[in-house]
Length: 259
Image (cartoon, rainbow, N blue to C red; front, top):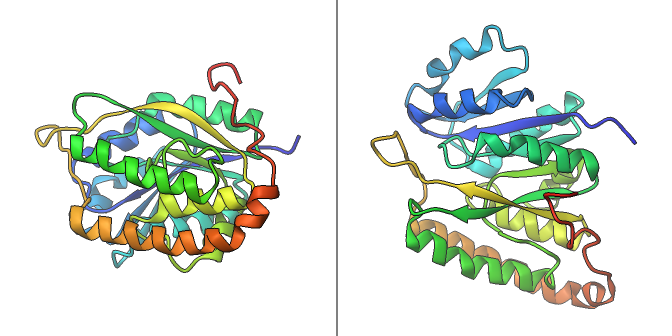
């Protein structure tokens, strides 16, 4: 089996003081970690400067202009592929994703290097109801557009991708550069037959007192998602004969705790 070289890739835009806590937690996993500062104006680069000292696997990539989450991931992804990394684990910088689950993502990827491992969120009481219920619409369309290939959640950002496959997907679309990154990538990976394993993953929404921030804008981002699903649905109709003839996701029945 080829060597698996994973990298944690963390895009960040004006995340504030919680960024430092999130990075410190992720570094405990012992996996190389790159943070892509996506045009932040809140001093994020200076906040993390000392992590570059004494952390051989840590790297800061800085974009001078805010380009969007997907664009930030793509920037880091290109560098990662050039650096010989085979897989990238994306996670948010705002404290929502648990560093304690990084080892399980890495374990599943090592066992199934051909697969994408998608976090499937387990919400607690901190989750806004509008966010929990609203994502059900995107999940329905993403599953319809892939004939229920096995996308447990279309919007959750903690995922481990085969790096070359993700780069190929990003080259196939001029979109997926902002908030539409996760759902569009998930759908296209389903079309390409990428095996998907869904890993139940706790998620929390830190309070303002804890430094929690959100870049989600209800009207703007829902318009973006609606436009995305309209585009993808028409492509889905063109692909429908192929998708009907294709087999099912070969790893859809994998139980993450025992894989």
